[in-house]
Image 1 (spheres, helix red, strand yellow):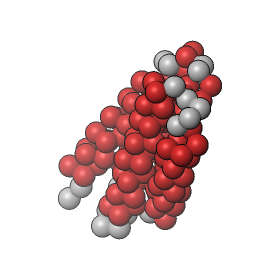
Image 2 (cartoon, rainbow, N blue to C red; image 1 turned 90 degrees about the vertical axis):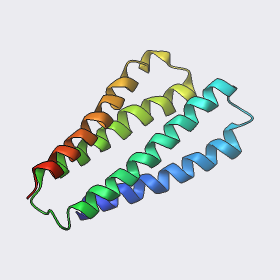
Image 3 (spheres, rainbow, N blue to C red; image 1 turned 90 degrees about the horizontal axis):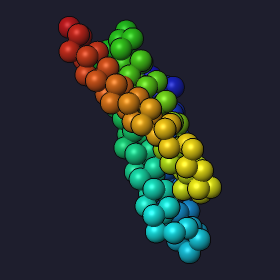
Image 4 (cartoon, rainbow, N blue to C red; image 1 turned 180 degrees about the vertical axis):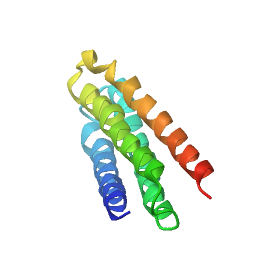
Length: 123
């Protein structure tokens, strides 16, 4: 529980920091398309950081649910792969990272479905 709470909190803080950095420092540097990609990365990082906090909260009533942990780790992987690849592409223009982004998106989807299944399986 504590680990996912910590991961959620640090990702929320990073999302706010990176969002502010993008809004204030990158606005004059990046093209509109790059800035849009950057902001999508921030949004999805924050959404899924909240998801990690939810996983931590759900572990209180369901401490033995391995499915919650698996779903949480999939959300972490999604943040790294989806948001991470978008940040790098927006800042560097490295389009070869494009195929990584949907893998991160798949981690998000599977993670949420895993969490759903974990809750459905609980008694």
